[in-house]
Image (tube, rainbow, N blue to C red; front, side, top):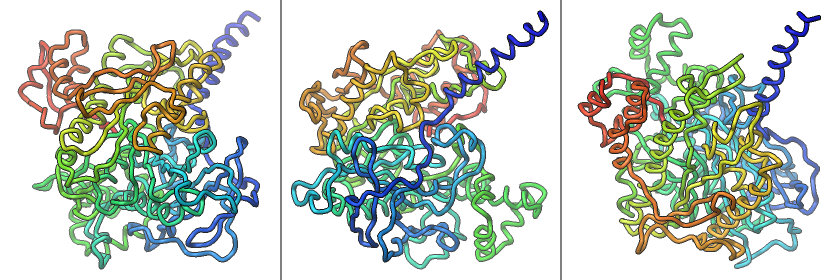
Length: 621
């Protein structure tokens, strides 16, 4: 009996740890199928009528409306085309297939799909939520409602629009909410002459297909949203992470001009790359990325045993005509292609994207774009980051976390963990919010409103203090923005009954600010006119930002605070609290390599011992 007890105790402990970890990993939503149709939801589009359903709170919802032809077969790696019309009323009651990706936690898919190629190339669909108007009582004219179009994040390689639910914004704040899918990974971004030269028009010669999808979706909204009660002349694009990055790139794309009128960027970043980085071999005179189109083809050739190594693959590829290369690529299945890429976190892939092709994007340096309104569309912008952005990416990093049984996580050194997270998260704020705000203010590009999300009142789960482990991490603000725990991927490990009241109060304030911005171009005092006044960054006191936090932690409040990479670099050089030399060196390299702030001599002399080249680079996506 004693032996049985001794055996049972660790087994029980393992089971409890496993159950707890499932709570940490379980996404809240994947796809929805065959909702009951509601007669009052019949709406016209240019391509045919659709009928939708309703949510429990009464909002109307239409799921899986095609905004483009399926980009399959010969439409792979081509600009999106308008959808085919249909005759009968189309049921819009199911989220259609997600775009091809590697399943992962951050993509909002069920756990049994993690680490597997999933999805389809037939994925260009959108979802709409609206207040419950009958067809005869739709708002018209100046009573049409503001439209908010959400672009999901996921490093442009994972995620889907169905993982976000707009029912609460629609009902509580009277907006039309749209979420979209767009092509991801190599299907969204692939720059190679074999692909470019198949087209006759200039638009065919790009590699930025995912960006063209977002533009196509906005075109659909412009042409059809009035049939749902929305105002096509008052469209706010908003997105988180890569969705924020896509939003910023839409502001500089001449093809998107006039399709939207305001922008909200949550935890975004901004960078475009040269055609050489996207296409060339690594060892070319103008080097390409390790994941450039030519290097991906090398891996495919080796995988198909047409070459034994990279040098042979390179020679084989160089001897192929562009026509044969194109046939070779088009004969590959979606799963064959995506499995060729390297995963860096949560299913996200290393993908060269946002190519400066002078078609979708101008060939300007990223850090120059917002210095001149001639380079971008000056519209009202609300932009910000989360205080502890990087912690969610550190959860799998064994430099900082011990992993037991492949399940349980424990921080090795809390002080180092928090210090590293602060540097990486501050850098995200500097590049993803403050620098952009400064440049727009200096170029008279209109009002900019800056925030930082600080909420960190998560529970403990089986001894894991989630507030320490994640805090105000990347993506935690998404359920607050949508006003429900169904949106995003974090609620299952951040929500508890104890923090419910504080969460709901803060969410109510955030949704009020976001929708007031959609209405007027300024968050002001929120839709209810009862919040702390949100002053713009630009003006007499440049650097003002809104802290978004619960009442018990100080509440929403305006502060004067801004940061730059110059500030962070100075602080890092003088830092004495990072006792791990490798981490100190890694921080400098990750933050400043290939930026104007990089100084190799300074790097080699960092801390008492100095740093060695090279170390792994961890990109912020």
